Image 1 (cartoon, rainbow, N blue to C red):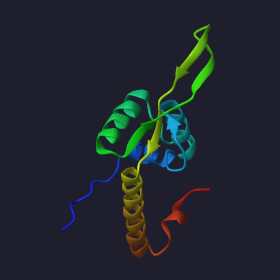
Image 2 (cartoon, one colour; image 1 turned 60 degrees about the vertical axis):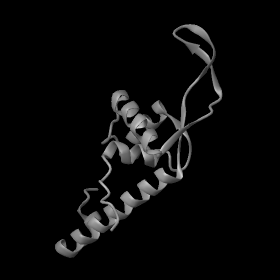
Image 3 (tube, rainbow, N blue to C red; image 1 turned 90 degrees about the vertical axis):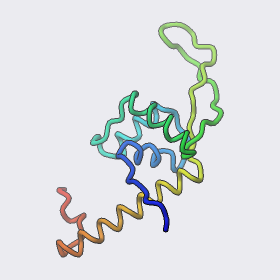
Image 4 (cartoon, rainbow, N blue to C red; image 1 turned 180 degrees about the vertical axis):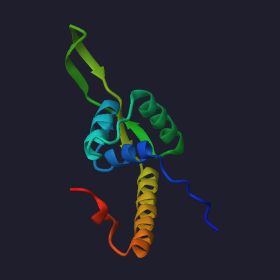
Length: 124
């Protein structure tokens, strides 16, 4: 019997989703999660970096090399600070896809009960 998989939290879901197509840094992930959710999900830095740490331990994401960024930081010339970039691993991709399957199955169950596709309940 396959071990029970716990559902992902919304924060974990959006972090993995943001990394599905491309590597990104923490602040970029936080911004993209807000955009993808229409502003409904806001991931704070404490949540973000705690989740990143946990997901790295699970092998879902990994750090990858980043190009240095040049510009001004705090009013002084930045000489090449590297932002940490994160990338989705195969295990992370599997975790996200398993969660998507779980969510789809839930929606199908709801449709059987309410008699119409749940997306029709969305207000436009």
